[in-house]
Length: 82
Image (cartoon, rainbow, N blue to C red):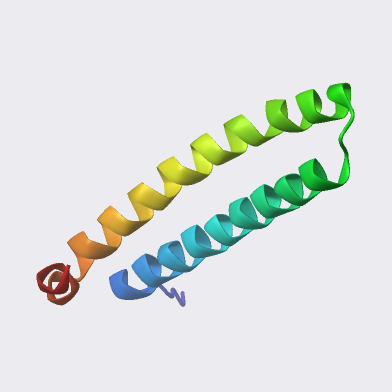
C-alpha cells in the first residue's frame, strides 16, 4: 500500500497561504463597501452598508491580528525586527 503524508512545514505553509487569501478577501470586501458608501448617499443605503461594514471590519481585524501573531510565533527571526 502506498501512502503519502504531507510534511509539517508544508501544512503550515498551506495554512498560512489560506489565511493570507482570507485576509485579502476581507480587505476586498471592506474596500468595496467603503466605495459603495461614497457612491450612495441615501439614508437607507448607508445604513445597510454600515450594517455590513461593521462585522466585516471587526472579523477582518481579528483575523489580521491572529495572522500576524502566528507569523511571528512561527518565525523567530521576524520577531526580533518588530
